[in-house]
Image (cartoon, rainbow, N blue to C red; front, top):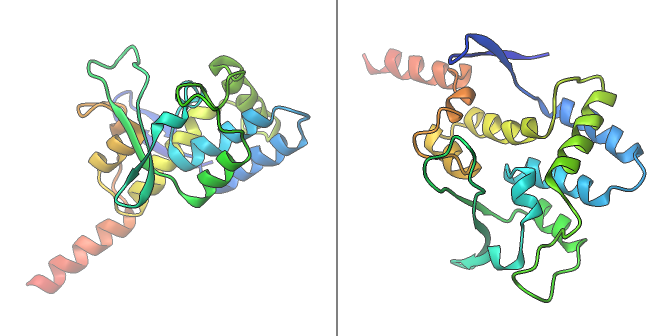
Length: 195
């Protein structure tokens, strides 16, 4: 299991590699029914959205920006948030495929998943992780995976804040921050070559 330091509490914060997501997915595939929970699982992976925002996902949240389809929606307000934030992510082919499996509501204000509720969705995903031997993991780790991956690919803290709908001054985003070995090597190589 991978760990990194959570600076705010001095306790290790677990990260989630793709292999662990695949382990949970294998358990999800064995579960009967729950197709919307399974769709929510992958929407979390590909967009970083929380279950509460997926439950409220509506056709009106999809807009065309410079010829590309984007998901733009106000993120639900959390207890710790002082300001409203917006989720703004491009609709990747994987996400588009998931949505193609769901009937588009005729009313642009109606939710895609009218029978999906946040608690049940989070519990189902948590069970899949438990059955995969990954106790204590759940849906928030699917979001965290996106943030971690983006940082590993060289994106900034600001990028992660925007992609995950965190407030600008969010302490939550700092949970993802650690020095990346690749970026550290790049900087030291630049220092060496500079002088």
